[in-house]
Image (cartoon, rainbow, N blue to C red):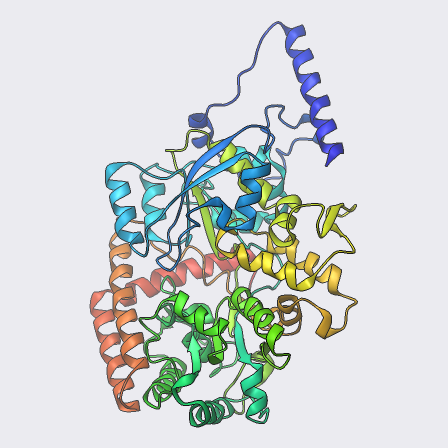
Amino acid sequence: MKKRKALLLMITALFLLTTVLAGCTKSASSPEKEQNSSTPNSSNTDKKPEDEKPADIWEFGSSELNLTAFTHYSWQDFPEKMEDAPLWKYLKENKKVNITSILASGNNDQLVATMMADNKLPDLMYGDRNHRDFLKLIKAGKLVALDDYMEKYPNLKKWLSSEAADLLRSPDGKLYQFPNYYTKTPNGSAGYVVNKKIYKELGSPPLETMDDLYDYLVKVKEKYGDEVVPFDPERALDAQGVGMLYTGFQENAYYRSLNSNTLAVIDYDNNKLASLFTDPTFRESQKFVSKLYREKLINQDMFTTTRELVHERVMNGKVAIFAGASPMAVSSRADANLSKEDPDAGYFVTWPIHKAGLDKNKIFPGSYDQLGWNVSVITTAAKEPEKIFAFLDWMTGPEGMTTTYYGPEGLYWEGLDENDQPIFTDAYDAIKVSEFESANDRVIIAANAGYIDPVKKKYESDKPFEKKGWSTRYQESVTWKTHNDHTALGTNLTPDAGTELADISVNIIDVYQQALSASGTAKSDEDVDRILDKAEADAVALGYNELLEWRTEQWLKNKELLGIE
């Protein structure tokens, strides 16, 4: 890090000397010019040698950065105070960053609509890259293009593959979105988290097939009654938990199929995307979900409960099995807290549950995207957009990632090695380290999975299983091995805002969410079929077939760009 600073000073001196000799000055590019320029990341012909790096780079932390930030998710806000998250507290005290959170308290869509109408946007917004509001902002010219900044600052350009960057670009060829948890290798945390104490008290029965799962949940209900929720899915309305069950009923199924911006299954025979509502696997899984519901083996409020209530039950050990797309942060914290008082308490992650007769190694309860999970965007309201990009670029690089996951330098790590990986100190504490990740969960907005996953493996690779950090333990042994790549199925399948297809998509999402909830709480298998038959008819009447045809074209283009047969 010191070498980089010295190099930067040398470059700056050379630049100033050249300017004086030439008798002229050169001003930095204005934000307006940078917003309207585009430098595709896939081109290698325009790369500058290291000694020609721009001299007007802003060093993160060298002066104040003030920004407003907003999370476009109904289930969470950014912290009200920077002191409420270890990373933000560090940024405030050491990097001169002052973040003012704009809180929606669950009314995100309404607040964004108001902000857009009043043209009073936050400086930074974070959320689903396919959200229609982000697409509207791009179309309205309200987001800052990041291409020039990406050329000036090193980390995103280094770690994001050119193919992924091109997939992330908007139709105008520009990059407006800074990805989170992007990667080039399999990753992900979706899985079934099992309460150890309850499992042991019930005799540690097999938990491999759907029949095993059902029998186990019945035993939980019989022994603990209303004291424990047998099966608790996280945010079922977003298909978390119940979507994982879906993947257990078919080999090589995609969890992504149930995402509101996909809503399609792959018809391999005809090389196209087909209806989710008529998919036999989806119907079978929803019949299983409704059976669990009727027998009170699954959270009875799964489609209306909050994330906080589910997490509270997990923390208190009042859940037998917890299932979600990203359960690691709360589960690791809960395991640490519960096991302090009782060594037999806590949680473990089981191998994905599957329908009897299927190959357990072809079941993928989660999927990963080379572009990551969500994005940050910088709006044109920002007075210093380059500084905000530099902050995100720092966060996605070695120093930022290490600080996010392992705390400030000097406690559990000291400096970076020749591979830019942290050098851990003797004070390293796996439990306390896991608490950093958990406490920072809602402010990790520019994570670089391609960097941090190998770092996690580095320190713990030689340790016995039980001595590894909780998250690393089960990511290495289960979740990283049981996620498939859905990049082609999850990218550019959302129509441009303001188009007829966009309206169709919004209407289909409404049909889907109603059908998901109604079929998941149906009174019989016959009702599940009836509900999904009606959903299919309603969707087709709204233009579902046209949407599927367009999504098939996009999917095929994605496959071609990614080199997938």
